[in-house]
Length: 312
Image (tube, rainbow, N blue to C red; front, side, top):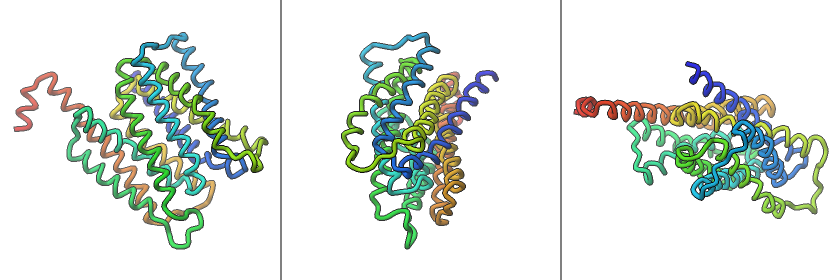
C-alpha cells in the first residue's frame, strides 16, 4: 500500500506540473521572448532538477556504453520534440496541440509491437483506432478562425508526437538496465547539448524581451516541466509503466485544456472538444488493454495451463 501511495504521489505531482506548464508555456513568447530562447531556458532548468536527482543517488551514474547510448537517445528524442513544440505553439493554441501530443502511447505501442513483438488485445487496437479519429477531429479548423491557418501546425505537432513516442520506446530498454537518476542525467545533458542549435535559429535582429515577463517568467514555467519530468522518472521506479504512462498522458492534457480555456477564455469548436474527449478515451483504453495483457502474462507465468484453459 505504501508503494502504491508513493508512485501515485509522483504521478499526481507530475500531472499538476505538466498540466500547468502546458497552459502557461505560450506566455513568454507572447511577451516577446522567442521560442528558441525558450528552449534554452528549458534546457537550463533541467540542471537543478538533475542536481537534485544526483544528490538523491549520492552522485552515482551508469557509465557503460549501453547506458550512455540509451540515455542520450532518450534525451535527444525528448529535446528535439521540445524544440519543435515551441515553434508549433506559435501558430496553434495549446488546447488543440497538447491533446494530440497525449497520443504518444500510440507510437510507443506500435513500435513495441513491431520491434519487441509485444501484443495488445482488441481493446488496445480499438484505442489506437479511436486515437486516429481523435487526430482527425483535433485537426479541424473552424471557418474564419484567426488562431490557426493552414495545416503546418499539424505536421509540426507530429514531430514531437513521434519523437516522444519513440522516447518512451527507448526508455523501455533503459529502465531495465539503468538507474532512474542516470536516465534523467543523460536526458539533461542531451537537452543542453542542443542549446547552440536553438541559439543559431534565433533571430537576434528582432527586439527580444529580457524583462521579468520574458526569460524569468519562462524559467518559472519551464522549471515545472523539469521537475515534472523528474517526478515521472521516480513514478516509473515505484509503479508499473503500463499504468503510469497512459494515466499521465491522459490527465496532463486535461488540466492543460481546462487552464488554457480559463486563462485565454477561448471556447473550442464542438468537433475539437470531441477530439479532446476521444484522445483521453483512447489513452485510457490503451492503458486498460496493456494492464489486462500484463495480468494475463503474469497468470501464465504462474500456471500456463490456466491460460490454455481460458483461451480454449
